[in-house]
Image (cartoon, rainbow, N blue to C red; front, top):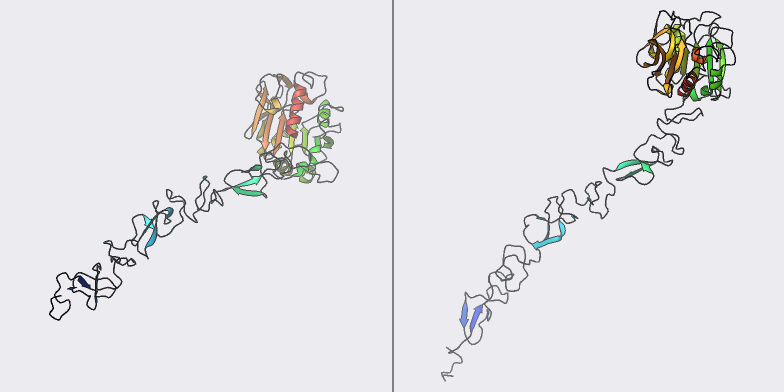
Length: 435
């Protein structure tokens, strides 16, 4: 323009060029040149924020390196290699997938591990022990599955409230038809369960196991509970202390119990004899002779027999006062006798509540041994201060003592079976002993 033979020297409005030191296509403001055309290495851009590093320029990929790679004034923002952090408010080391931050450095209360299904409870996380609480602890989407505190329930097929130990189900709540109990010994029969009423039928209703009382050990076709011994020291028919055709014996046989007669003078009481009988009735001296006491071996056999389920009735005699057999009974019965004047008589109008005394208002007898009771025995009725009706639970068995034979005598004399409630007393005794 100035005709000096040189083109574009010292122009009035030259553009400014910026040196691109790192050659990344972006220049800095540190080294400039104003010429009409860019010198080698110069460009029109001056936006490089670090012209010594080819990876740093406007719009460059941002990385987690504490450097502003894209020159936007922010360090490590939207870095390509930033990590996803998940909120862990409950500090159980598992993060909430719905509460995230993407950045290079770990924020407070955020972690890299995801999977928490409830970030408000530290007991809820993947693989946590599941509890019976209506919540999902292990984050598998199922509530109360495979819980560590589930209860074991047992099938109660017969609906008696007692479960079959061989059919189980582990659950937080009882499934229909299941119970917590596992003590039923027959879950197909609702009459069979622990401590159920026992019947003389050869079935273990109370789940205590079968014993001789409901077995036919001598193979005669009768269970022990269907057979009784009546023991006395006389050749008379021992169904009754006073002779044949006993009304008391008939009341017993009406319950399906056979009566076998024994003479104690000629028959010793042994374990093998007793095991075939469920009921043993023994009455005191009679007009035909004195009754002998039990030997130690006999007392031991009686003790074992009653403890394992036998039922024993001792009927005193109206003029007996020497305790000849009373003191030879097993000590476990809790019964003892004191030699005294046996000449007492009268009636009873006051009773200790018990199945044997149920419904009684007036019973009577006359004379006999002077008994006393210690645990486990108890006196239910007295005549003139003399214990008249006594009972005892011994092991699995039962014992009844009646001071004299009058309530068991056929009707005809004073105070015999037809007096007042004497017959009811006899029936109550049979019912309680045989139940």
